[in-house]
Length: 425
Image 1: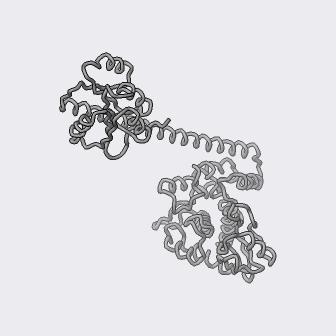
Image 2: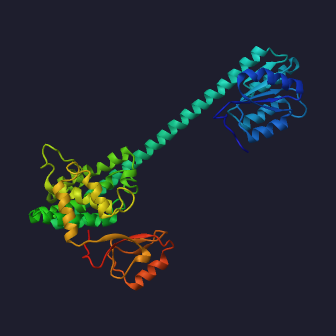
Image 3: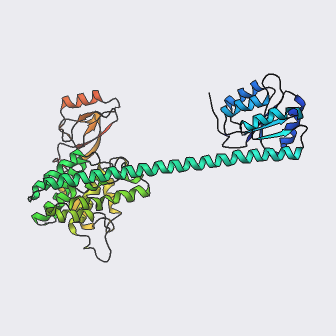
């Protein structure tokens, strides 16, 4: 059995039921000033068919009709549309039956015939106001329920993140040794275990940060700390809300972008559990600090190195714009933020490093692949199954197999040309 709530949009609807045509015409004239949609039925069965297929706000029915009387009709109507307002038109002889129907709670109002038009209009308006108020209360309840559900989901998500963070801290602390490399090994394992973290991106940022730190002639310890800060720069995402990495950064709402930035402080908190990695933790916590025109030495050089390498790799993998970017476009974009987000000297050093490394990365269609090209990221088919791992060196056989596996001939891949030295960034 279908059940309908009162009409939610547009004009309210009034259903008039009477077996006498002249009564229905009179009701039409009376209701004309009310600006409502009018429906008419000449018997109870016809009215029930209407109620089974259309939402009605107010039902006005005569008591005495052939077959089903008005009281029985409104009793059935209450089951079909419990939110409707039900009115009964009665004669003096119907008083006892009407009182019984009202006592059963199926009728909210009754009008004696012959009726006074002003009184009838007033009763109809009361009925329309009652359904309108009931609908408003229902909408408020629905909104409150939705907000409560959302709050429960947020609390559950926060509890889940807190449990995960506590587990990470507990596991890290239990395995903590005085040797720095032990801490690095443990943290690296978590990069592969946690779905929130992209270990491929982490490795690329880390290796490029190490290379750029060497080019800046930092000490061996600073170079290693740059590598570790790059490797763990997104480690704090495990304590943040879901969905921050599945959607490209530029497509996130402003609130979610701010939430993404907060992972730096979260990562700092987690890494500080290792006393041997205090410096690395500070690098991670400061990675989104903007450069000050008055004092370009802040943040530290190591932090600025990580910031440049982090965003270069994120642009390269499509994590920022939603599509993989070539070096030319990345250079053009990052240059716009010179001495705001990125140190000008480090940007120049980055382009020089990539040039000296003879890195020639391009986006190729799979039919243009040639043996010797190197895959820079994991490749999946349309179903999400892994086809090739990052670092695969293409052969004639693997190219042929790949082209058979992919339905779309224009799928794009990342490659490093064989004439250029492969640099795993």
